[in-house]
Amino acid sequence: MSHRHRKKLPLIWLMTDERVEAAALLAAAGRLPKGRAGIVFRHYRTASAARRALFEALRAIARRRRLVLLLAGDARLAAAWRADGVHGDPHRVVRPLIRSRAVHDRQQAFASRGAELCFVSPLFPTRSHVGAGALGRVRFAALARQVEAPVMALGGNPIIQDQIML
Picture 1 (cartoon, one colour):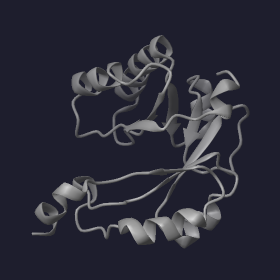
Picture 2 (picture 1 turned 90 degrees about the vertical axis):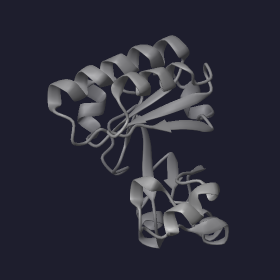
Picture 3 (picture 1 turned 135 degrees about the vertical axis):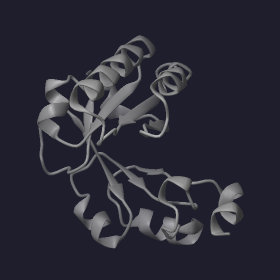
């Protein structure tokens, strides 16, 4: 990882989801804009060998397309797998990893100190967390102001709001 990632983090992020088939995920990663996007690899419940294989396939795409690749979970594992950063607890520091964090409420905003990037969510209702309350624009803005790191809006689609609420 070079220091250029620290100067300007991407504005476009792909969050992996185990409900999406590997082929579709790899195709989506291959369409991300070169040098201007990032991937947060989650896949928490995927078997260890399959998780590593999928991560390596994404890492090859990320290197070819100059994308930032973060591994959700353990910072030591992210360093061992040669990820650009870790998504999770920003207090477990393994330099020079980029540290990102999910923020859903005030406590998490306060706990995010030390992170270099925060994903504040869910902005809108989302199919991945049906029944979870969306922040909406006003509460999102209020929560984002409490975060010291750069903020990325995450979650949902205003168009599907009525479909989810049915």
